Length: 264
Image (tube, rainbow, N blue to C red; front, side):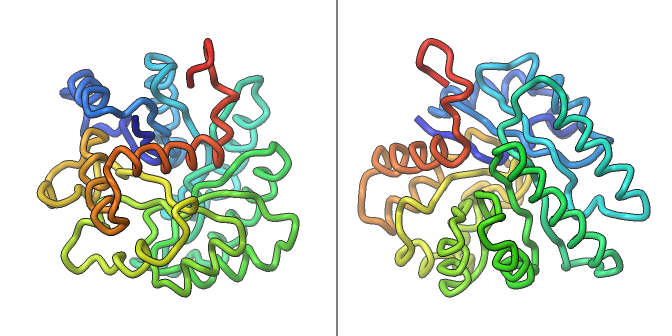
């Protein structure tokens, strides 16, 4: 049994075969998929999928850093409006910083991140952090929040051991996906050295498909390929990786809130 803690199954890239994609995910042993939000342009599609698959999909709400622009205050107001609805969100995300393509809105990205962290703390929710070329500045922002920082996960973690240890020391998990299977992904030292209870699995579908699917559209059904690589590095069976990472995800996101008849 696996939990995909970060998958964009509502993406338009699945519009032609979403039912088949969901079926393959279930057949692969995935029991739950957490859907990170992006911005106002995709909230409706995300929530429609969650409504259609309430026992399989749980939605987050948040503003993706790449979508932070001149209208970010309006985007944040929409996030806050959603947070006040009488419903359960699985997390606030994905939020953070992205300094890969453009740093024009770095200040606004920082402001949006800090504000959404405050909401996460207020509503008792975990956060899912996007940290492309921004792990160190985000760690500094989180450190500065002290006891007021929320719990959460560094989604698609691709940093070094020292960065992983800093994140874990602040109470954060590491989201591990397809990059772990890449020949030069650089995650082997991290996965060998950090505590097993700090790891959760993700696909980030439709992006970052694991080897041997690299370069293709990613799917939640490929999550066992990530688990297989981790099992090799941990020198344990894939079933143990599934059990450990599922327990980690359930605790991090407080998934018992969604339980029906004892099963979330």
